[in-house]
Image (cartoon, rainbow, N blue to C red):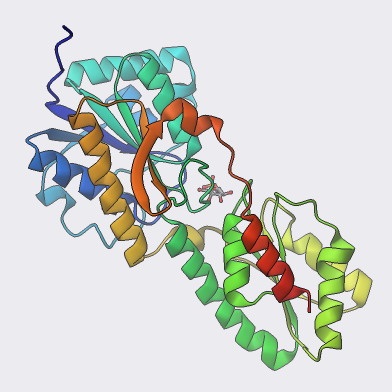
Length: 327
Ligand code: F6P
C-alpha cells in the first residue's frame, strides 16, 4: 500500500498581475497551515523566486496587518525562465532543497499553467484564482475583481459629475486585455451609455454612435462610454466619435489604479476561504487542483480541467446591458 506523505512544509507564491486580496490569501494560507502544524515558506517574485531560491520564512506574525493591504507582500512577476524546462528543473531543485511538500500558487491562468508544469515534475500544487479580470472559467469569482470594479465605479461616478455639468461625452478605458467582465460589470454599475468588450465584435456605428444618438433623442446631454482595453483604445473611440457626430469626448484611461487599493470585504473573505481550502487540499494529500467558487460553493477541480475551460462573457448581463442602453 502506498504510504501517505506527511505534509510538513509548503511554499506560497503570488504570480502574474497583482490583485487586491492576494495578501489576505497569503495570510490565510500561512495561518491555516500553522493551525495544522505545517510550516510555510514565502516564495518571492513568483516562479522566478522558486528558480533562484528567493524565499522568506513566514509565521503568524509575518502575516499580521496585511489582510487590509492591496498588492502582495511576496512581490509578483511573470517569469519567462520558468517557461523553459531548465527553469522548471531549477524550481524543482529548490523545492527539494527546502523540503517543500507542496506549493500554493496565487494568480491567474498563467500562474496555473506554471503550476501544472511544476506538478508534472512531481511537486503537489494547488492554485488560488486571483485576477481583477475575473476570467478564470472554472470559478465564478477571482480574488480582486470586486475591489477593482468598485475602484473603477468610484472613479467613473466622479467623472460623471463633471461630464453632466459640462454636457460632455466621456470615454473611459478599463483594464481587460482579453476579457470584458470588468468593463461589463462596471458599465452596468455606472449606467453607461455604451460598453465595448473584446468578446463581442464591435460595430462602432451600432454599439457607440447609435447609443449616443438614442440617448440624445431621449433628452440626455452627457454620455459615458466604457471600453475594455482589449476591445478598443479609448483614444481611437473618442476620435471616431468626434469625426462622426462632432462632439469632443474627454478620454480617461484608468490603468493600474484599478489593481491597487484596500481590498473589499468580499475579496478579503473570499481570499481567506480560498487560502484555507488550498491548505486543506494539500494537508489531505491532494494535489494539482485549483480552488473554485461555483454557485456560491467553495470547491476545487483538477488543474488540467481548469485550464481547458474558456470563460465567455455573461450573456444574461449582456442582455440586461442591451435593455439599459437601448432606450
Ligand atoms: O492582471 C490583469 C491585467 O491587469 C489585465 O487586465 C491587463 O491587461 C494586464 O494585467 C496589464 O498587465 P501589466 O501589469 O503587465 O501592465
